[in-house]
Image (tube, rainbow, N blue to C red; front, side, top):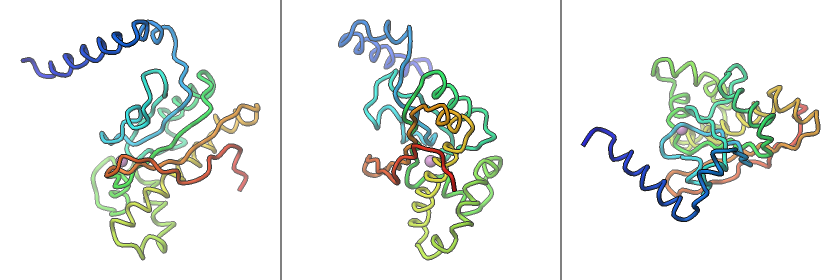
Amino acid sequence: MPPLQHLLDSNRDWAETMIGSDSGFFARLATQQSPQYCWIGCSDSRVPANQITGLAPGEVFVHRNVANVVAETDFNVLAVLQYAVDVLKVKHIIVCGHYGCGGVRSALENVRHGLIDNWLAGIRTVARMNRDELSVLDHEAAVDRLCEMNVCVQARHVARTTIIEDAWNRGQEIHIHSWIYRLDTGRINKLAEPISAPILA
Ligand code: CO
């Protein structure tokens, strides 16, 4: 069997099953998408946005990168946000991290892994700024606490982009959610109330 043939076989089975339960499913999706949610999550293979929220194709606009970072200089995440907000008119932006995140762990441990260390520099800053709180925790607890802090920091970064500020100034309704996923239970927890207006402080 050629490499990856099993994936193509499984894709064919999936498409046939979908059509079996709703014959017009793909035909409808092909003409337009109108997702209600934009998801910014970690690239970790264990945190697939659609599956863990029970959302079908067409229902969530997804951006994932290592450790769900929102850097104001990253055109990739900015392009996703701009399209989601200005074109798709998504009302909910979900920043979802996860406990035990390898990127966050790496930022906390401060050991060299290569180029990725630059990507994680912002999280190292969060760790430094919260050194007092993190240093009294055992290592695993500190990693998990930093995972939570990182989600809240990145959600605030979303709120401070010109894309979101301009949308709020136009009167567009947008809520930014801070969520965290637990790998060993499959459950998502809310970390904070949604941000629904410009952060003034
Ligand atoms: Co991760």
